[in-house]
Length: 156
Image (cartoon, rainbow, N blue to C red; front, side, top):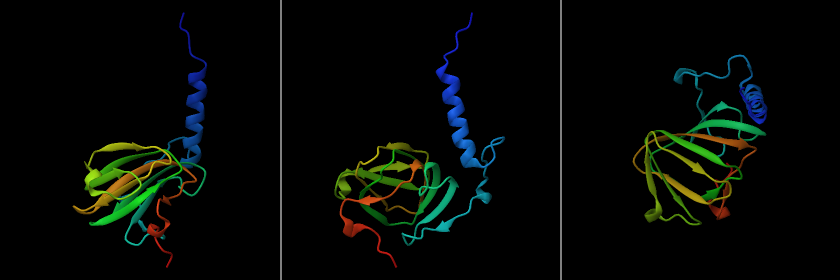
């Protein structure tokens, strides 16, 4: 006799329902070829490109975004209220952990790298070697909280 864990089907149903709502089509989910991904300028941070693949970081629920950072970008220490995962799609992403930007704490993550970022943990990044694209997965509504508010991008 096969015993089925009653929790597994329930968890599976909840996850499928969550992603089906994001996808807009519960029968097939979301598929995008690179040509179907729309890049837009980040309205808050000049020079960054954003492609919203699934959901929105500004709204409740799961989201998947791609973010394009230009060569030489430095982002000072900040945190996010949600747990996140990152996959480096192209370029080399340098990340360090702490309340202040310290180049000696940076770790280079080349294309294909993956890491997790716990909610509320201050970190800093840079892209000195060239343009870098990362895919970010999290749960909205999200935000960026700079350790030093003076480092936040200024509204234009």
